[in-house]
Length: 162
Image (cartoon, rainbow, N blue to C red):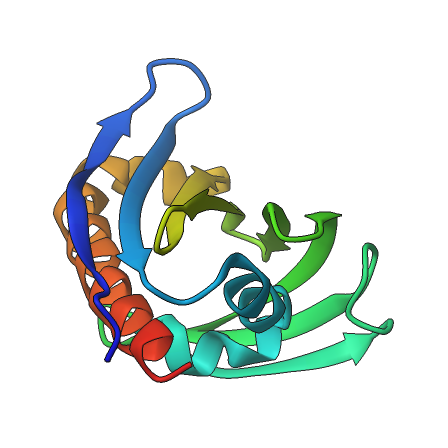
């Protein structure tokens, strides 16, 4: 049985430069680093571990750096699509993806740290809003915090199933 659980409540902050919202969550699991990395590096699995994702498919590449994914997410009752590009992969340590559309750039950084009895996953999502979407930032803090909480729960559940 997996001993996955919340170890630290995430943070939410609004940077004064660039109008960026960043959320971070940490999850601990008894699953080995290698299994966690293999699962999280395949971004098509986001439909299982990211509560906001309703569809995700690779559109180019082999899953390595430079590969692209079309991700459909539900946020505030609406569906939106982002094209994610794998920017960095360090086996058993890190996955970095950048998603973009006309209103936001989302950088997802997933770090996997070995623990004596499993792994720790630190998930950081940074949202940089563009154009008129910047005007909505004061109203997005709470919904983004809720989205991060939901993603933490779904990530925990997904790692439990590995």
